Length: 111
Length: 492
Image 1 (spheres, chains in turn purple, blue):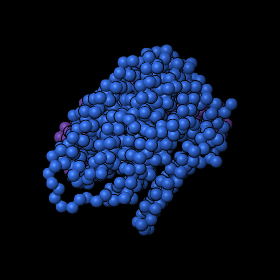
Image 2: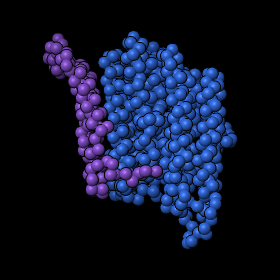
Image 3: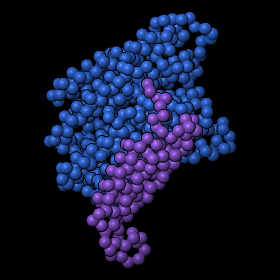
Image 4: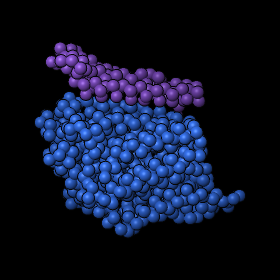
């Protein structure tokens, strides 16, 4: 548990570093997915505390995990999945047209 | 009457009916889309007209107790965006009838998703729903940028998607940490608890919100997507984005900063100077970059960035006059920029290009549209009787009143700078007549009507600014006094 928050920080930095340094579009998408997943890990870590039960309140309980970060986490997972789907769809289209995955070779937009 | 929830139900219902009607009979799609757009405008106008009896209003979805409920709220500051919701979507959809020939049903579907996200973001009073609406609007924007399916639009969409995803990660981090620090996501309960947490935490949260939302309204170091996205996307989307959605993101950031942290927090620290300076920088950068552009769409995208700089200065002052001036500039810039983009689209009919150098002698082919274009560009610089003149005057006097003389000087300097690039297309289209071969392109009703209507509205606002000032003059009450907002949401 002590290492949980440093791990999250490390993951966020790793993901951002990947996005900033890679030139391959798929690797950039992987980087973004790492950042997004680490935020979801943070949400899970926030909700949990030792000895807490799952927040399903159909039986007597003493300690439950916080349900709100979990709900937010589920929403974020769905949103991340759809963003990743759009990104991959765009990569397929761009690859069909330019025949490359390198972002430096895709530049018609220079005003 | 509780009509607030209908601003969310109507677009949702339209989204599903477009799918069904497109399957049954394509003829029904347009009537459905326009009925829904007229209804949404009607609701916004209803709230604007009856503002004295109805506002502030709270709609409690599901009637839970107010601290955990899903609250939709409207107060006098929200009316700033409601003015735009009343005007922009309808005209943008009208223009899109002839512009979008390929897969129109999909376009209308995405536009309605965008409107749903925008109205939701404006009205929601808790951060959870705000995040959901934010992502709804963002994802539909990504799809709309890629809509023309050309090389440049796909490239721009990918760029926007990468920058936008990183931005929303920071926003989500800000929301998560706000929850960690305060234990609530209800916008009215956060301010009270926010005052108790350490200053450094508050500053971190504030930077996360500024980055997350700043990406979306093209705050200067995060602006790179905007010119690219505008270059590749349809005019109807650009008008809606520059005229409504960008302003919505800005509006939400202003509300979050003022309500969560309070105006005293800014005035005690150096943040007021920082934000005003940031506004000046984005304004100068936008004007400077626009000087080098040859593509009309890119030029006006940079001009939008610069104009938002003025709004940042005005809100950054943190005074009552500044907020009124900023809201006025937000509205008048959105209307005039919409008209300018429509005109650029109309001129495109004659040349088939947005490059300024290929527009030589355009005035010969489209005399009326050219004159309107010239008048609007000069109006954009801020020459009376345009509405931009009134709003720049208000910002200027607010800045001088608050003691910011250098930013006030920079506003005037920036306007002169902008004259440089607004006059370039004017000179090009009035020189180098080449003789026009073939038939003149005839504009259809739905192409010139939105242009003329928006230009007319701008002129009327410029001549009689009281109409808009009456609507927004009570807006600062709900920003500067956190207690007003808290009592409005949570009850007395």
